Length: 490
Image (cartoon, rainbow, N blue to C red; front, side, top):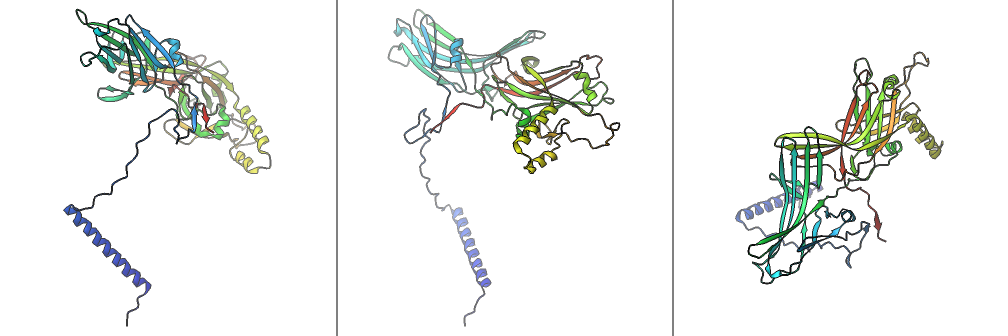
């Protein structure tokens, strides 16, 4: 009689058989691999190349968004006795200054016209694009760094059987990097600064286009036409700036703001309460050159009397845009700072702003929505002052939670009630000067950095219990804003 197996026995036997088959297959693959008899990999299907970019959509394509940036159609012409250089694709700002202007990987294109009666005597025509950086320190020497050198032979009689044409076209892409002692660094923008003093410093980053023709006479005669051009690589922040209304934006989108905390120094730290300054900026401190930078400033202390020497006696509170310029020439470094924009501050009443915001919320939410009202009560929504608490440590401290300061739990007796905390708040804005054309960068021995700087100076610095205070927050300036005007295709 046949032996009847249970389901578990049958599954066990199947697993054993499958395991044996897999082991045999693995052994077969190992033996075939050792003898080099493995089957070749199947051929991959041919991939079609990525289509070249075109300004207008093809028949099988559809444009989803249209940028509103107008095309650059300006033309700048430079001439000498026998050479005329025509440069196209120029923005309006270049036409106003009569200096060619290009951005990142911007193509330098145009044509050269030779006003030469005897073109047969022209031996060669070359176009050169050059960039150089010069750094100098008073009584400290000077250095020169080559940033860019491109030579385009447009005509050579030695390799051509025809006379030189009267018009020669050209097009050249500007590289994005340069070689700095074997390292590839971003190509710096056009820049020039001269700061006198002891020691004075000077730095220039300059780019030029040179056209040279060589004619055959008794000796080879050269004629060169040179013109400088402005190189401004465009940059922008990774996201738009937050809402300028600080308190509403702080409660709805706290991740959009960062708090930079510092302590105002005191003459007798052991006897006086510390004063804390909180400079609040957008969480991504990257700002366009031509837009307003909004900020919020708070000074706080455990007792209101600690702040009175600052608030009641006319202390100086300033917030401004500061640029630091560092030059290194032959291991000698000079560092100087200049003010690139003065901030405008206006005092704000934090208690009044908080109370007004609560009244507006109550009108919008209504009494029936108890959940929202309960959340406000849990947040300490009274009328005493504004307290900002941060949860992260190290680097810029992000503002995670903002609420009204909970009323101190103590005795009901007025004699036993402690002195209330001291708070002072300002809202302000700063606009970069029009002379600031480029953001910060580093190239060789030149380093440009930008800061938002806070200065607090008591009215009587020598006798006041509060010392002068300065706090600089590093930021980055970019050429363009994040938001562009786009048109959605229908």
